[in-house]
Length: 405
Image 1 (cartoon, rainbow, N blue to C red):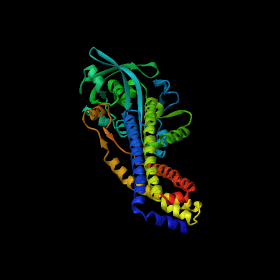
Image 2 (image 1 turned 135 degrees about the vertical axis):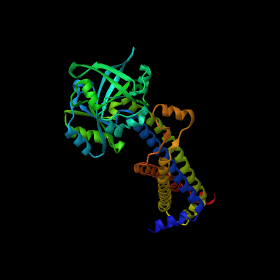
Image 3 (image 1 turned 180 degrees about the vertical axis):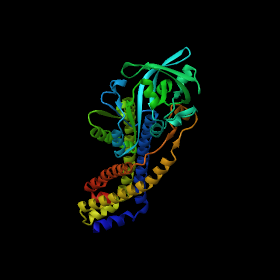
Image 4 (image 1 turned 90 degrees about the vertical axis):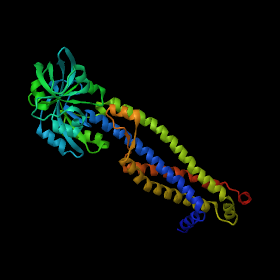
């Protein structure tokens, strides 16, 4: 205990030196926390934007549908399954869809398109479909009208209140044909969706394809995107072998690979940051040893054992590092929180490019508590390891040479 009290007193014998050391650790924690939270926030925002285009975070299908996406692999609407999905912790919304393909026609123009039957209200809650309207109005459950993507409307030279003709193959090979007035025009950030999508109310799509009460998927939104993997596994266990449950990463492996590649690049940048932090902390420890060399030589000369001096210096370093880390975490939390509520906003042509592809032109930060704790622990461990330097110098110190410094 007396050694701890002595170490604490020694810290404040030279306030400037101690404050400089703490400041190096303090800014190291803040900098690493901001970089990590910014990285996590940007990736989370990317995932949120991508899944809100169309896929949702999780989808439930009849087993085998994802490998062979035909109406024969659809399933009847099951109120019990919907209740099981909504009852599951972390699920914030569920919407049913009937998806297939058809030939869209207007005059002499034709184009293959994706036809999606949706429940307008729940679809808007899960993927914010209404917010993608750029002309016209939204549909209701009882409507027999269509929402057309912007690129497809341009290709077919159609506008709001024009009529769209759809021809395709229905359930069990029946002929599907119908005329639908265009209620609204949608703009998607995904060029693929923007060029080929037609949205119908679910009942109208079921009648068009002769599919009765059948759907091809349930699309789910979640409260915590970080828990998607756990939620997917749990839903698969609850629903059984009759259904397949896929996360956004399984449905869009190219996006997941892109994030992994970017994460690897950020790991290198973070590694360089940690190296710079190490040099900053080591520089202050080196300065401390140079300033106290004569003092330590005197302590050795009057008989104080090297082991005890080493423990004293180690305690001083530990107190300094812990104080700097705690202060860094305390300041990082409100700072990152402010950047989360007021994210970095892009401007000019770059912002226009982001908006054109359906992305909000911002760089937000994530506020997960684990980020602050992890960065604090990493800097703490680095500081403690570097604190071994004074111990090594003491064990090798010659008292006479030190006193003559």
